[in-house]
Length: 130
Image (cartoon, rainbow, N blue to C red; front, side):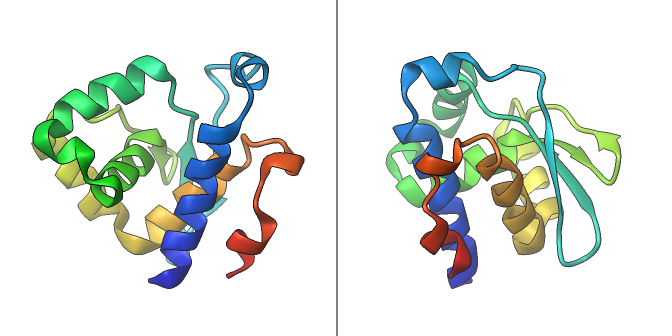
């Protein structure tokens, strides 16, 4: 469980601390992949400002809970599971279903995929190793 929080934190930190010029330069359709411990290919794309805004509205009063927000951000970044395209959750029920499907192995893979969007100098390598 500690590994999940470290990897997720590194991916979220990389997105939050990236300079605006680097954030703009990312192809909005770019998808990165990682394989989870169950052997599933998990594809993720970098969330953009509108995605984050809509997800914050979706979480409502829970959007202030950083752990819940980080988990929702990671689940919402997933666009492919085992080659099957999946859409961004637009309801709390759909978000819960995505989280259930990913579980911890899928979260870790999604974190690894999202971390690939960060330039190497902005990635906290020590956090990923733990």
